[in-house]
Amino acid sequence: MNPDLDDARRRYEHALAPEDRERHPFYAELCDRLGDDELGLTLLGEVRATQRNPMLILAALHWHALRGHEILGPLYERVRRGEPADVKVDVATVLTVLHNNPALVRGELWRSTQTNEPGRSAVLQALVSELAQDRRAINVIEVGSSAGINLHFERFRVRAFDDHDALTLVCRDLGGVIERTLPSIARRIGIDPNPLDLANRDDRLWLKACLWPEDRRRHERFDAVVAAWPTWEPVEVLCGSVRERFDEALTLTKDSFTIVINTWVLFYLSEEERAWFLTRAHDAARAGRCAAISVESPLVEIAGIDATKRPEQRGASRIVVAREFDAPELWGWCHPHGRWLEKVRS
Ligand SMILES: C[S@@+](CC[C@H](N)C(=O)[O-])C[C@H]1O[C@@H](n2cnc3c(N)ncnc32)[C@H](O)[C@@H]1O
Image 1 (tube, rainbow, N blue to C red):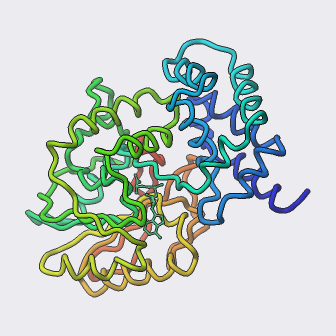
Image 2 (cartoon, rainbow, N blue to C red):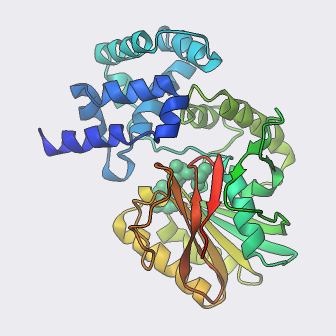
């Protein structure tokens, strides 16, 4: 097989973690069929290297559904409502639509996967409470902030069980008791080459398209964030890549202790930019200037972190922290959307 298509097939295969495949049969089947389909593989192969993620193809289809495509619209709406259906038939219909008009997806490949997942705020609360070390106020810099929702990480309630409030994050703490005394946030600075604005209709629609249609809870939460957003103080947005704006963000926050955060971003950076940023952030931590939190795919290599260590759960995200005056260390693992969190025993 053409090596590019082979690579694309592997990406579809690994797009969903096993636990997510069970909860999202429509998306699991869609990934399987796209990964078997020459057009599905070709489209993914056409995506620029830093965005070659099946989620972009899935989001492009979802985007047309949300914009009222005559076949995809009602089909995805049914999937979102969880109405019983034959998943194989639904996915075959989606593929027929795609084959009849590949431009539907091809026309959106300039976009980026910009999922802004508030579930990650549950993980951030646990980590910030530990790294802030009883400080009353800190600054936060988020690299790859998308719409900036997680710069308001402390606004969500975190519970082990669902209380049916849309702004509650359900996160199982698998690693023991995690204290959550949070400092107040003096400055919230986001860096993103394409910052999204929750007040803009198209941006909101793209953020929705990046959510998975079967995860009703995520859609409800997103809607609740959009409703609350005007009452939350605005975040400071530095538009540009981390390479272009990170030093400026560090300068802006130099007067008080700062935590630098990156969640599901490094995958989208070139190797050179990734290495530059990690060195910069970890050097700043070693110098006592900040602490740094990285929640990323374990496929992203971080110097000094043993890449062979894996958690029990496949598809987990790896949490690496650099405390002030210290080198980076493996903190633990979590679900990519913050459904569970596990601290490794040192
Ligand atoms: C998958 S989203 C994750 C958003 C957010 N961190 C979260 O976890 O909810 C990745 C974000 O990284 C941004 N990004 C891509 N390349 C970047 C770069 N070179 N520097 C900074 N941000 C970047 C994208 O625009 C996008 O908004």
